[in-house]
Length: 248
Image (cartoon, rainbow, N blue to C red; front, side):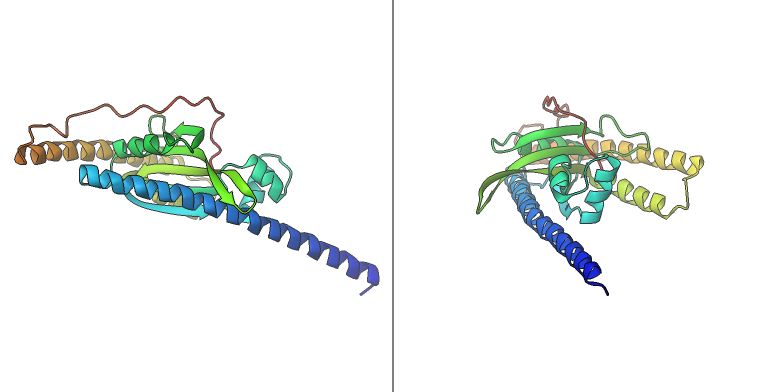
């Protein structure tokens, strides 16, 4: 191997190592942001349980985009391929999926989280009131949370997707089926998946209605005289003048 070739390989190795080091630095920052938001959600869930004798959150999952995933999204956006560019242009490097029991729980949790004074709402995209063409439903938020590291206070964005158990069930299976399909999914299968999404959305509404009836019976049985399960309008989303959400 020539001396020049050896120097080139050493240079490339050094640049790659620098990129990996930068990624781990960013990863630490975003993992801390996930913990901050997840802790807030856990506290809200526990307090709700104490006040209303039930938990609005069924479970939560968190994830970090890989270097490959970040680079692929930057290419689609025609942005410079680097970790610094990813931090500047991507708001979904860190993500949390919150799975709730009922539709109204989604908006309750979202409003309680975004009303906290150290949370800044960057994006609010409601795919429940306005589902995607394929039937996908979920509430997508991007919130900015302060992270305190050795260098001081750093605001970090976290994407929060909130959905019901039924929405999560459909979304997971639909994604799996489309991923396994060879080439473009035939129209008849797409139509059937869309109909399944509509059926599941109707079931979500039906289960919420049943729960409210049970609440009324429970309240009557306890002699409170309060119709705890009276129909109430779904809370409105706060007005946020922001660009449309980046969804993976």
